[in-house]
Length: 218
Image 1 (cartoon, rainbow, N blue to C red):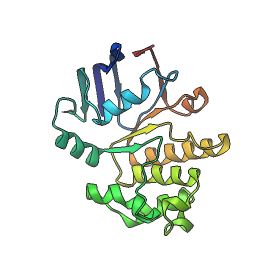
Image 2 (cartoon, one colour):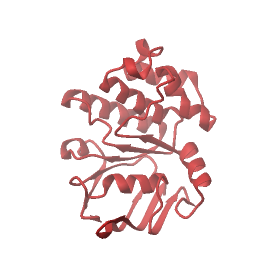
Image 3 (cartoon, one colour):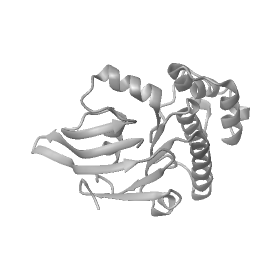
């Protein structure tokens, strides 16, 4: 089992008291499996993704990645596991403005000690970025930045890809093409994919689907 999420609970403090976001969420993801997480705005989808990535700690429950517990570990250990095993695609891209496309694509792979120039070049070509390798993020369109973010997440050949609305800034045709390519690349690398999306249509591209509503899986 690649990922085991067991009984996750999460609340945030507000002026009106604790606001519960997740209530006892549990699911599993096997290596090579693709899973869509759908739900209305505010249902807790991004929070769940952050907990799985170790970016936040749950109030209760466990996240286990390849048999190693992620929740309850120190920030440094969670960061190391994220660096070595997880590829993240954020809604906001989070590209490094001082690095070129080439540098952004290579960044995560270098940190993980798995930089492969041939793999970087192949991904760039398939993502339509080969002619943009020397450009910086400010000179790219939103769609181009999104493709760089996806490439960066895959560059280190991680075990798990976590994608939060990875095609949110693309038109329908471009979104379909990018999802298809991402699924191809994930399949070739043998990674598992957990993708947050508000779109039932895009969720249909993935192998399985979970729906989150009011903090619970339905």
